[in-house]
Amino acid sequence: MLRLVFIILISFPIILYYLWKAGYIERHTENYTEEDRYHVARGAVSVMKRNGFIRTNVFGTENLPQDGGYIMYPNHQGKYDAVGIISVHDKPCTVVIDEKRSHLPIADQFVTLLKGSRLDKTDMKNQVNTIMNVTSEVKDGRKYIIFPEGGYFHNRNEVKDFLPGAFKCAIKPKSPIVPVALIDSYKPFELNSLKPVTTQVHFLKPLYYDDYKDMSSKEIAELTRTRIVNTIQDVCEA
Image 1 (cartoon, rainbow, N blue to C red):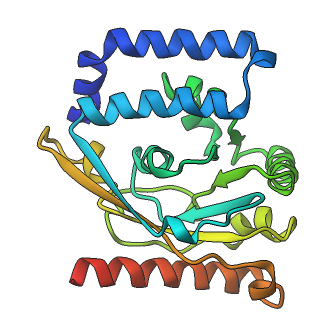
Image 2 (image 1 turned 90 degrees about the vertical axis):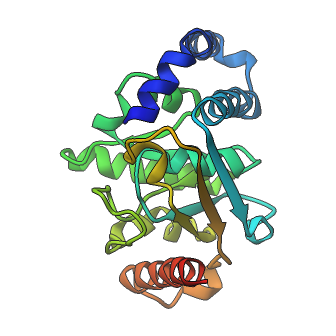
């Protein structure tokens, strides 16, 4: 948390600007495209990375589908995960985030700016509506980040079990599933240090509908997790 506090303190005037900008866009939303919103969000991310001494290396961008919507399924390590992916994903994307976490200061405005989906884990009706909304948007070409572990707690580079239900948003619209391996993504905000850190984002080969149409959601979850685990092991052992 030391780095996060440092970033807020040293970047406070710029943070205020981006919060004002996000609010202005929301009040005049008809004048801004998704690309415009994403450009502003990535500008804020760039400032955070620079002032926080964070570097993120990306691998496998050639694996990202060129057309249409898709869902990225990464392992979950901490608060930097979605930010790290967005910083290296050139096309506009957004995120499904826990309702409670989404209303934290700054995160609230960030999710709203990206038109993300908030998932209330205590409300079954909300969960169904969120899945239907994400399914519809992916079918229309939007790109989402969904964390199938459902949360994180000092995971570091260990990957917990994936929740099969998280894959319904991809199965229903028959969209590509892109496994994403995050490495050392916990370091920016879990380590109590201001030393420069480097994280990695690996976009793995996607699963297309023809690849998974005969599989259960549990089998899809296990296959996606296995590919991520294998990538992390290969990189960390190299």
